Image 1 (spheres, rainbow, N blue to C red):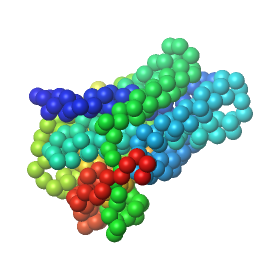
Image 2: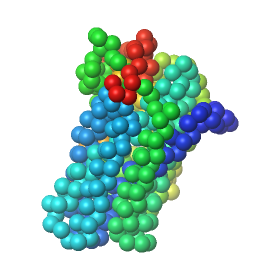
Image 3: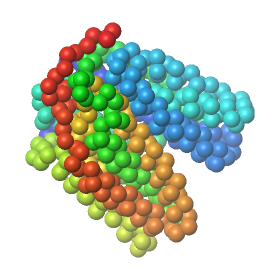
Image 4: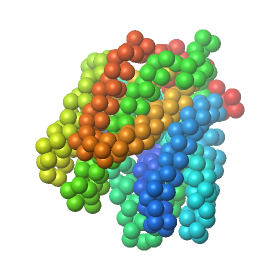
Length: 414
């Protein structure tokens, strides 16, 4: 059944960069919850922990596109290696500041400085786009694999982070996350034979992803999708807390990601029969409809078991939608801007998660968890409306990794 994925990983160098990239991305899944648990335990303040975590998200949203643009200009290895090393230093400093009782402002400085790591997921997708430049069907499968791996990291990362912080010592989660992100990124960057060449943009093409209207439409849609994720997390916590079952929140959120992971793997095995714009619109419509299930479960006061089933089913709409959206993003981006464009998409999602978490928490507190789940439905519908309104701008230019009219490849020295 999964022979298509085995064939992908059998390509020279593909298994290596996929595995090393997975290590680095797992650390990203651990990072937020490990930082929260560490600060809350050592400083006794969830408010401080949340504020420091939010500062890190702001740094990530700003820094990722800038790093992505540098990668497009100078190559993956030449940017990723110094970036991950410079990121590791303030993370280690954060450990010492928290453990040693340093002033609160030092935590914010360290969190901001440590948020500038490279976008390994985007780099991995760029490598697949280059390796499979002549095989659109295989690129579809590869993007599905990458999305499933993302979901796997979101499933296991928080669980591993909490386990380390509670079983060993409060700093264990962040320390492990730092080691994994640094080692994974360095090993990923060392796989030079699969690194895509630098591409010269055509003279009339935008030199930046932010000047591409179609890319901006998709980033806006991804921001709304991020609001879905953020509101689901905080609303589920609030719902379970109201039922005295807050300890089960990690398992239920894992089921949400698990439904997405399974659907993503299955989606990659199916050939794409419609155009990417139509597939993305259908995915967003399905996502909106499926999110009604946890809303109905909360509104009717259903138990934890019913909500778990609803979240797993609702999660099944996420990966196919994100796979198609990322594929479409690669197609609308001009040559030589793929890493910046992917980083912009991640920044949009991260910003949306932060906004959705804040709004969902406020709504759940004031109007109850059912209203929080209604925000998730409304956010998915907003993403659908944004894409519908901008659909005329989503015309493929050819793959951003390998444009329709391939420009000259540059050397690593430009």
